[in-house]
Image 1 (cartoon, rainbow, N blue to C red):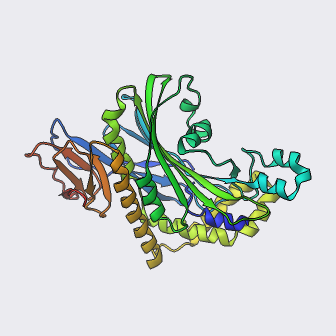
Image 2 (image 1 turned 120 degrees about the vertical axis):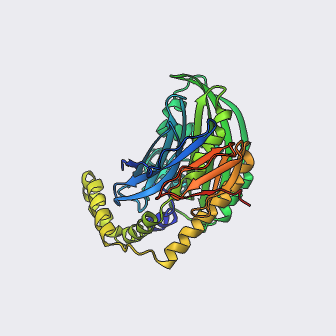
Length: 393
């Protein structure tokens, strides 16, 4: 059962400190006064020693993030954020975290005389034998964010004394787009909601897009009845400023891309990890203090042994993932005003950009310039070429 749960959770994203590298520089050129410039930054995975993700950030915005490999799981947590301290504004993609539910109820049904022990051993917050935390399935994505995610990873919301729900909207189209692309045929429940509260820097508005991903198991006498996951992104700004920044936040979120060489190696390492799982479990259970060091040593060894060549199967999986992301982004845009989908000329993916500009250009390095100036020409550089971006179908 434990091995089955881990295989079922194979697509979870997990996290080591990362490093950021600046984009290639272009020759200086005068920019129109109204121009918005976005630069790609890459997220470095210290575990695999490779750039893992790219993300666009506007001028003046800072990119941070983590890729953390856990001792007992084959894939890493991903945590990304982009912020502008001067504007007191930030966007963040939280790690997708998995939980087990139903273990206590099944155990009590099997051993009714041990109800008291079960309530302690399998209470919410305890670790299940599968390695996942035990948590009752929340009533809604908002319930998950406020009562489970925020206390762990968003203390500003958890500690707010005047927290208020300003608005909430179900997102069935967005949930369906995710479900249609899911090979495990799980249930998806998505919603978008806005909160207001007072933070250390004053009155704040914060918006979440959150999804519950639910895999239910066939009826069984012992073990969990489901593995569920919480997925969430958020953006925050001073009160009254959030709506004006939503196109920027949407552009940042739509630009997040996994890089194929890292994806190729991550899949191979995960497969090798699963093959060695039983031996690793025995070693780690003997001395939990050395679990992380052992995991990283194995990770580095497997990374060295993995092939740098990308197989046809991995290429196909990667392309399917990118196509699914574009479909999800199209569905997501139904809920966001003042944005338009554009085709990335470098890889054919869809980017959501602010719709108040007539002209969009992208370089072969991934830099994007938006302007309403018809006379503007992108800067000339022997190593850089620019293409106009076309609206996505």
